[in-house]
Length: 297
Image (cartoon, rainbow, N blue to C red; front, side, top):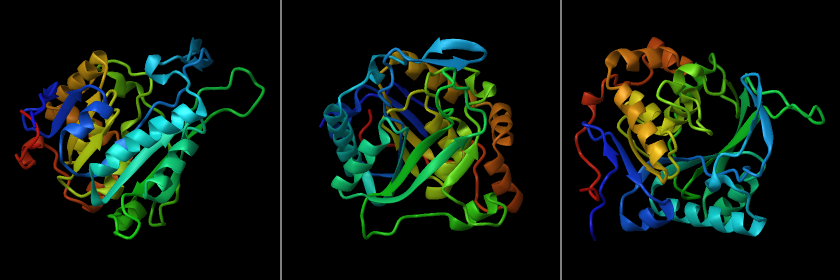
């Protein structure tokens, strides 16, 4: 089988991007990851409007987010979740974000494919945009399904760390975290960019140091930036060249130890880890193992 050529790979090989469609690229390699995070299309780009930074704006994200029929949505979600299951270790877990527009389809597909749903986390945004129609409640939350590959194979969960982050109490499935902050857009803007605080918690909860993490719809690669800040390794797949360039710029930015330290100091969960020495976090990527993904040139 011909090896794949990365669009970008960091010098320490802890961050790799492939350009293309996950449906086409995933069957081309054999490798199993410790964790997958996916932020698939919500299928919301149908001419709606929202309110951002004091202005009314169109919420269309791009052709990749245009609405589908329920049957088409199910076919799409079943297809990528089936491919991802084959690339997940038997004790691995997957996280999928969404809103009511797509998350019920995702949940149905997970169960059809034999995953075991562990939690449905509600991300309650502390700074949501207002509802400009004033005819229903403000949209202030998203859902994140956490599932493991095998129904009877135990998964990893860092219970003690999550408890410490939650001030000594069991972490609940409602997370009050802000939406993306201005400092996270230093290299440019992605229309559906997730905050580093959210991905940091997900990665800390379900992986150990040096784990391999995969994102089939990597966008601006928040998953990968969080992974590297926490001493994990990352592979992302993305179609759009503009988003790949944004991801590359974000990764090169944290090669500066000053910038990486500044980012880590802004993420409250990392500060808890460091305060109580709950996990060996590797600040610089040169602490990473140098083993590479075997299917790459």
